[in-house]
Length: 511
Image (cartoon, rainbow, N blue to C red; front, side, top):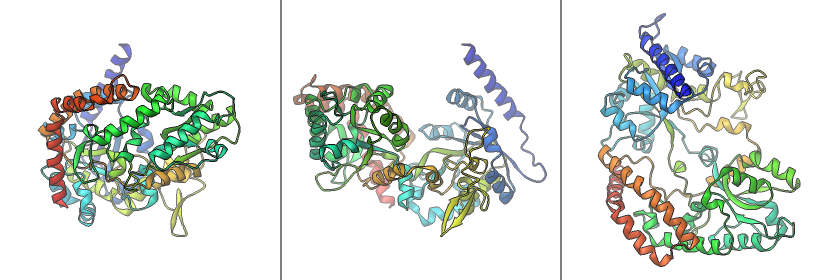
């Protein structure tokens, strides 16, 4: 309770600061207050790249961060009505509601009149504008845009996938699996042929939360998706999903799946991996830094991991289930609040961030200081890659924070400069896949439809999770699948599906 009271006190103090901030120009330059989720506002206020953007636009920005209890602080700040000029926060269905409640501005006309760079970008790539428009064609926020035009840019969004023990494959004379049948053969070999060499059948062929990553091999996903015929469907109601459940049940019965596939304990998952028990799992691209050193300490330096490509479906296509790879937009967005007395200045500042120079300043920093051009490519300087002994982070962050989702047009590939080769290989491997099964994340439902569908899924998701577990473990026979699908229909999935289909049809017509 004391901690929460303290947090509220900090919020009230922050609101007092916001209320006391003058919007009057100082030294002839407009002042913009910018609220973002971060631990150290001084880091952002001292960025040399931001200072260069301020000089280029003639607009000064003051970054404000909430206290530790960020989400509560944000909600209290919005509820108070004492707002900063700009907010950079997680996108959600609340964006439409914030506009309806008068908290944020409609940016459609402001962008058309005062954002020539972003306007030109949307004209050149109209599919980007479609991803941020409301169902009525309005724009309420500025996105952080990844061009997704190079393998490196696509790789930055492909940071998660299937990983396998490469040394176990080599020991057993196997290759990395590509299809669901090949996965069955490999996992069976892991179970029966003692790849960890301890003389016991203690191997866990596949462990962790990644079972839905096998779904694309069957041609559907575990939510609203696009099937192989180009139709919008709810994956768990389709016969392809039943085939997936049948396969997972078989794997479970034969001991190919660890208990953590259902419990989802990250510490337990880690223990199994580093103690030479797990043969394959779903993980992040940092697995080679996070798991491998301890695994090698516990076993031998020969232990190794390999990023596995997404499975091939029956039609030969590799499909990714990752929704974020199907969108150019980050989940963090930037809005201008109704409290902003100079929205034109805010738009001018933000529009410059979308320019080639502005995006460069936000990600790479200052040419000749934090980066330089070598053979037509940007390279971080030795200074930028030096660690600040007091702060413990790279000197690059004195210039730019490339992974922050500022409104910009950049794939954040600067982050790759500090990655080990194994991590880069993993991202490239997982980037090589079709997003055709993913329901386009940029499709916006109107407020009422979104609220209805969200309400349906709030009820459906626990039931879906429960029944999937029962089907896979055999507690519920798969002969009950039709009853399961009928129950989903009764829970409102059919009505929600029709909304998604209509929205998809309208989205297609825009193309």
